[in-house]
Structure formats: structure tokens, C-alpha cells
Length: 425
Image: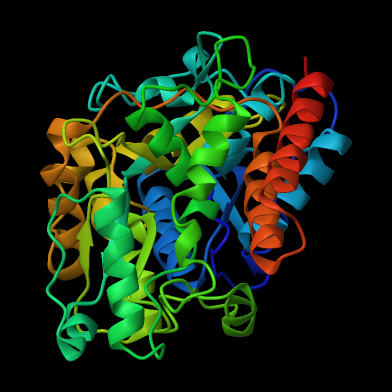
């Protein structure tokens, strides 16, 4: 996933920590209103998501008095450290919010529950989306919502510089020229963007635009070093100019993103970052556009599960966990609680039960506008992908700092990728 998520430190919600008992689970236990079972649920997010999640949990408990839910959340980076520790000890929480990047890792180690063995209604989901939660023909994750990649821009900033808002279709040359114009007309006070080629998912989209698979069906890399060099070279003449913000400046602005800190005019990221970008930047409105493509008929876009719901393979409360997951992904009132803060609701039942206004409507309208370009979502990435996504950004940063040459950066990332693939073969 994108590593510019800005979340709070670990906060406990409820009185129990989100860990299940170790050992082989007993048959799924059920409760009563007088003696409810308690399941543990954990997620990553900020205080806004925590507040919405607490409302959804309370709603679930009011409709399911035989089940209590204890919640716990943390920041994105800390979240996966906790899960790795729990998995090593045999005690993952009963139900978890999940990221596509880590689904295959845990599913292939038999640490997640096969949700095809429990009762969860997926009839309101697009069939093209469901494979993203499947590994080797079994369903381990149910998408809560979708997001799509986009380019954010602030119309007010462009107007102040006398720059026309970009069109909804543009090539990489168009985008690069736009970034250069921003840097020039602002006198360097505003950069065009950060280095968009350092983002793995944008690289993935570029590969799809060129009909290249990121990974083969047997878990190998589907692209070459030359492909990566072409990608990383796209804005080569802009690096070191006001068109692209420096790595040093990005570090100074953290934990805000350059866009949220009003240091750049555009940012490539997932569309459900709209609310966070608005809040951080203080902008009155933001516009979202499709990413550039040199093929106007192939934008390489897809709906990605912004997050999924999964359960521990060792939960003693399979039925309760399934009911909670089903509720969180299908209940119309839950959809209206979260709106687009998790992404656009994946279930039509939730979308139909949700009122989208203001920024939420902007995100929904964007996904409608790109419908004709959407292709099937990719299957869960290879085992170990989470570390490769992070190293893609890190090595790109080292290249931009001047610590690595282009060829050395490419060799470094490919070596890491080949090592990960070999370890998990």
C-alpha cells in the first residue's frame, strides 16, 4: 500500500486486547443475549476511522445481542508488526481489517479462515472484484470498499499561478510538462509533485497500460529490468528542478504528505485519500483526475479493495466472526457511517443505503467516470509483497538522494525481489 498513511499511535478501544487464544480451536462457539460471546476486532486508521468503527460496532451489538466486539487499532506500520508477532505466537485476533499486499502471505500459511466455509453474502458485489480476496481458489478476504488510483490537484493553486486545470486525458509528456510549468510559474515556491515513479502502484498501472503483468501466475516477476528503467526514467529530466519536490523537503514535511502540506500542486494516490488531503491541506475543494497514459484507450485502471475483512483460522467463534464480517460489508447503515472514508462501499447494498454528498460524492463520481476503463482487479500479490512495495519506495528515494545510480537502484530492487521470491518458493 501507499506508505504515506498518517495515522495515530496505538489506541485501545474497549477493554480487551485483540488476541485470540492459542492452540487448536474448538468447534465454533455461540452465545446468547444473557451470555454473549466476545470476539476481538482490530484495524488500522486514524481517530476519524476509530469513531466511525465504534459506531458500527455498537450498531452490530444492538442488532446481535449474543455477540460482543472488543476493538483495537494502530497505525499502518505498527499494525503489521503486531500481526506478525501474533501470528508467530499462534494468536491472531478473531476478525481483522486487512490489506491486499499481505493477503497471500497469511493465507498460504493457513493463518486466515477460509470464508467460503461460513455464511457471508457476496451477491451484492461485482464479480470482477471478488478474486482480489481469493488465493488458490479459496476466499480469505471480503472487500469492504473500493478505491482507484487518481491524480489530485487543487484548482485554487493553479488559478493563482495562471495555469489552466489539466484535462481528464493526458500523456506522460503532458503531465511532465504540466509539472514543469508549475515549478517555473511559481518560481519554485510550489513544486509540481513528488516523484510519481517511486510509487509501486503507479508503476503497476503503467505496466498494465503496456499490457505487462507485474507478477506471473507462478509467482515470478512479469517485467524486466529494462521495463523498470523505462519507468524510473520517465521524469528523469525533471529531477533536480522545481517540477519535483526534493527528498529532503519530503522528509521535513513528514508526517504530512507534500500535497497535504501544500508543497506540491498534484499527487498520485488512491481516491479515498480525498478526505485526508482536504483536511491536511485546508483546501476548499480538490479535483481528482485519471492518471496519465500514452494509450487513451487503456488507462491501466482497476478497482482495488481499499481494505478487506478477514478472520483468524484459529478463531473459536467462526459463526460470530462471519456475522460481524457480513454486517460490516453489507449493512446499509454501516455504509452510511463510513461513506467513502474506507473507499466507495464495495457492496451495492451499502452503496444504495448511503447518501453521498460533498467530497464523498466527488470520489463516487470519479469512480463512475472511469468505469469504461476499468479492468479486473489483480489477484493478491506474491508472498512478501509488502516488503517489496516498501523497498520500491525506499530504493527510489535513495536514487533521488544520489545514494544510488539508476542502474544500481534497479539492481538493488531486483535482488530484493528475487530473494523474496526464492525464500517463498
